Length: 96
Image (cartoon, rainbow, N blue to C red; front, side):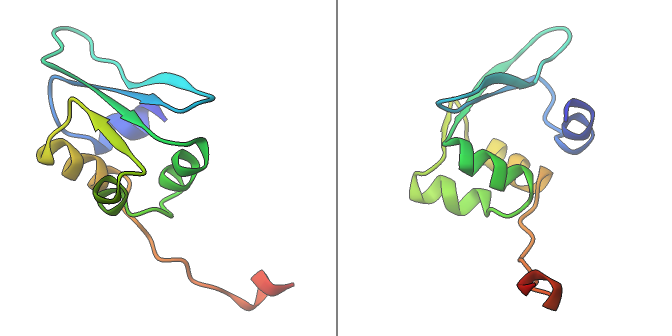
C-alpha cells in the first residue's frame, strides 16, 4: 500500500495517518521534514470500502463519516484523487 499510495498521492511534506477503532497506522511516512501531519478517522468498514475504490471520499468527508484532522480542501482533493471512486457494475456472475 505504501508504494501504491506514494505514487498516487502528490503532496510533499504531508504525513497521513489512518485511525479506525481497530487500526492505527501511518499510511504515508515521510523521510525528512514533515510539514503537516494529517489523521484520517473512520470506521473499519469505511476504510476497506475506500481502499477498494467503492467509496466517494469527498462525499464521506462532507457527511462526516470520515473526519480529517489537520486537513484542508487541497489534502481532501489529493486523497480523493489518489483512490478514485469507481461505480459498481453488476455482472450476471454476481447473482450466482
